[in-house]
Image (cartoon, rainbow, N blue to C red; front, side):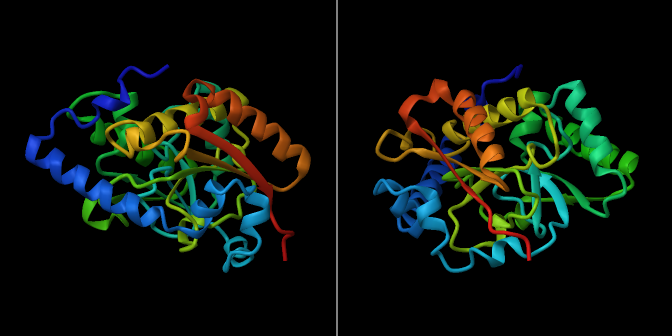
Length: 267
């Protein structure tokens, strides 16, 4: 489906910049190792056992999500829904049609961002960011939502420091602004009603970015896996999304762990 290898996304960096990039990644990795949830997951506990006792859990589900942004964990303009590229840039034609209908007149802010890995996957070349911006702007226009752009100096982190991918089925989980939660990609494809094939493809693409030199790459292994964490409103939905997630990351073997939990009831 994708026409550029994620491990080539940084191919134009100079050696000096690459060294600095690796230093920043090492620093962020060391910080993430001290995250309460990461420590508990690595000890063998299940996310459902861990998460309800972490401060801020209920509050993370109490806010209306107000923006649709790239799944990229560096980008956060508010309480966030996420998709790779924000515009559905990696979706099937069916998925793009569904997304446009779901977003119509929802009063959301839709943003494109600088240095977008999803845009580079969909449209390799020096103008990939321009392509990403144009797609988000077009989606915002056709659906009656607002449009904005996010640049590197506005990123919450200068490097891809995601230790997890949240496959979000509730439309209520503001994990991007929950400081106790590990840095994450957010994939709201299930909540947005997108087809199973698109859910799996986007989970795979985001995992590829995490494992590339754009992210933590070879730091992930069986002892230090990348986590796909599913949030759902019911056991039936959770079971279905867990199955899709397992299928999406099967090629990564034991370097990826999939787990999930049922969200607290709406207030």
